[in-house]
Length: 394
Image 1 (tube, one colour):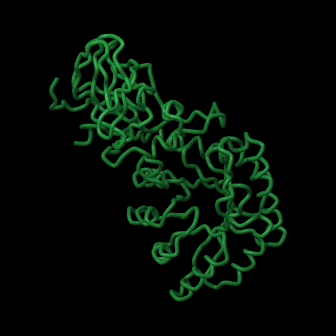
Image 2: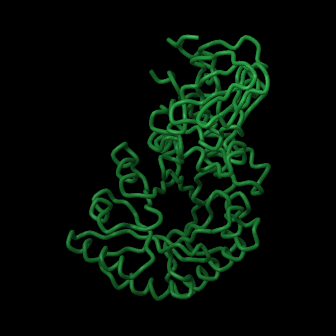
């Protein structure tokens, strides 16, 4: 039942290829932490984390305590870091499972300290320094004060220092370079005081592939360095970061034709009749909609692949169904595979293209793949496996 209505294939060969590219960009001696929050941006966190762990990835970053616990219970034994902020109600379960925590305020740390001491344990924390993102993090000019406060708390162990670079193009953006410079100055100040934590990390995917790892390594800090790679591991980068990164998209999203019919000129298709046939048209119906990850804004804008050809999405995308114009594709049959994301023959559509058409970012495209869409792991040579025959009428 995995490939019945809509399914996503996750190419492990491409994933491992990307991990190698990330390790090369990070440089020898720099650890890689894989960001797998939001179910690995829709790609399936547990299977990819276990695959990465087997290939020696240093640790994993998540967005919530529930995501961390899911990884730990699935067998991820290495470092797991809860990015962002901790909600008080998550504290006990995080300590129970040895999850490390990003912190940025004295009040939150006092709560953690008291809880850890009651349990006769220590909370392992990474101080988040705000260099310009503005959401979370202690201002750089106050970071040393917070570190001093943390070192006086017996239930807290400061194991890391981090920042989150705001520009989506990383160091290709002048502000991104300035934020790296601010972070570097903080690291040097703490190093001079002998207070630099044992792990320092600043580069996300965009910063990594725009020189962030090399920039930090050039400071020759007396500590271990790491990078946090998320979207790059899944084969994507923001536009303008590095056109030569050689990353490979690991996700394809496919469905099938379940019904088609011929309609005369002037026939409206879909809710509110936003598309009308300008010629006699063969309309094919696909059993996926916006609940499955076919972006609602794709209607009358996007294309999909059928028998190796691009065809337009026509009419509005509904919750469960999408319609396409296959008039110019000879021999289309019920059961034919339709590729929303991925490759057919010489044609391909990636998340960046679909995001441009829909006025969004590629992260949203993959994160919005619905839970009705099974993620099926494959190896590259098996991606063109036959689709089971449907039970649908013409």
